[in-house]
Length: 122
Image (cartoon, rainbow, N blue to C red; front, top):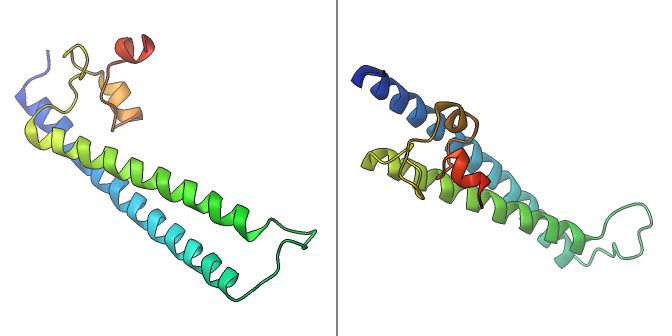
């Protein structure tokens, strides 16, 4: 049976993992925003990519980057919510059934809010 020391160590490990994931996500988001700004600037310059048989259109690239930016922002929100649960002492508890989420599941998906049983039944 895990003791208080084990729980503190698990929480510290989770906090470090979430902080690292948050920093990586912020870096990725900044890079995507720079790419999107460059594409917008390129389209404002009047570049005619609609007739380029070699490459994707600027509109396609802009939409693709917008989707990636949206995905990164959603992941950042999930990280922030997990960090809040950690601070409140509810991290690792399934939001559906209240049971503990397995350490293996949290290691694989630190932002998860449900145990494997509840996630499987959705």
